Length: 454
Image 1: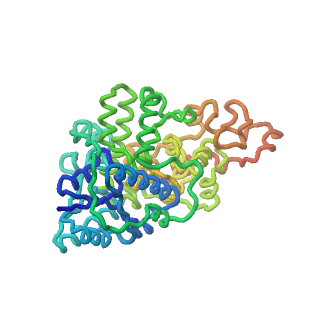
Image 2: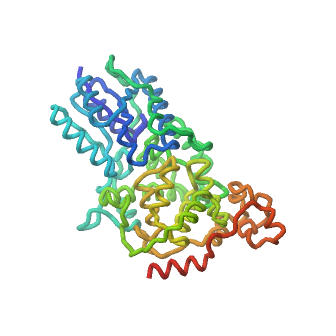
Image 3: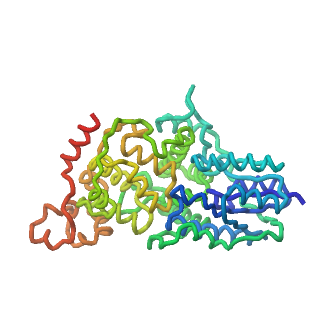
């Protein structure tokens, strides 16, 4: 009987998975394979929050395969030799895998192709698995990628999406293939995850889609920036690990229609936009996409205060504490804390991007790094010198202070809008708070940034 390998990477799902479907169409038997890749240790991926979510996702994937008569085969080691070894053991003619955009994924794909071809086997790379529109599918005339979102979005809207695929009813897996336990993935990053981490896996992701679709999609356009309302989809971790299909979500949102669905589709397009930028410019993960001649400051005390959520600006601190507790942060808060570090404090954006990757369960290289570059003004923002004022942001997106009171308990008893400016409270009240004063004057920080940027 003919056999193919379906290698799972960032596509940990059964529904709408072209990799698994492609392997199933090309052979009578399929080996669903996941490699606990030791090479990831040097990439920054293997941190407790993402590894814990990954362990959940793999357990759920294995359970789904077993319901269909199969199982997940787990190996541990360097990805390329482990995939080749599994292909030899199963006598598989083809190996199927999703395309990636990071430098690591590109190198892995090239090494794998060479190793398989030298062994008389074929590599099949599938697009539109991790993104809705494959990077490079839409490009401006004479260029390899779009550098500005709005024209990209227009082209993206016109691009045809493939049809979403149903999950296979059965998966026939060869017997006799050894497998590590699914929990072997936890060896990538020993340590405790954040206490508020969401449950990983396709089952949990689809449950989240169902509940948010009923309660949140309709008014998403009006409420997506409401910090206290927590009205965003929270689907980003499931998209990052491929527990949910962006193609399926775009189809479903377009079918639902309305302003909320349109706004949600736009966010999915932003995700694709960043992937096509990184695919064309892999060094943008660490190098300024548009250099501004910055002379970054480096103040360890300020960086430590920012990471700890002790800057003295309550809305900034609330976002940073949510990140530490949940491994996730509201998108509006992400923009604010990134602007605060890179512009108000004028610290190198790479410091913030690394901290986010250390904690975010949805820590995606394309979206994290390029959103940080956008906030720092070194990326694709058409207004690179805009600075988000935390007090103006508080008045607009947390007017009653509920978000701050939730995440900065030292200020929970402060009433009204004064929670955003505790340094203005009467001295006796201020002295009772275990909360620092502002580490920088906003106007001084703004003037310093503008002077440095020229």
